[in-house]
Image (cartoon, rainbow, N blue to C red):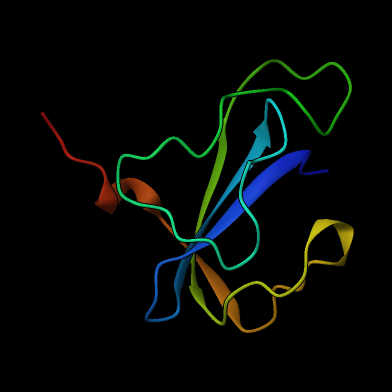
Length: 88
């Protein structure tokens, strides 16, 4: 189970999914978020006995349709997110 989550459409069939948030996001479908904006806090929602963490998925393909257990992931593939993190 995802617990509380938010999916962000970045355009060009590229989107990210952030799961197990501490509380429900304060966004509605269609709201815009900006780089650096807080979208949620690390939590442990979704499964009993889970420790706080963030489950991040990066997808390429058609954007997720629907919410909750009715979410539809057709025509998507996961992408390794490591290439999007800066190295020091």
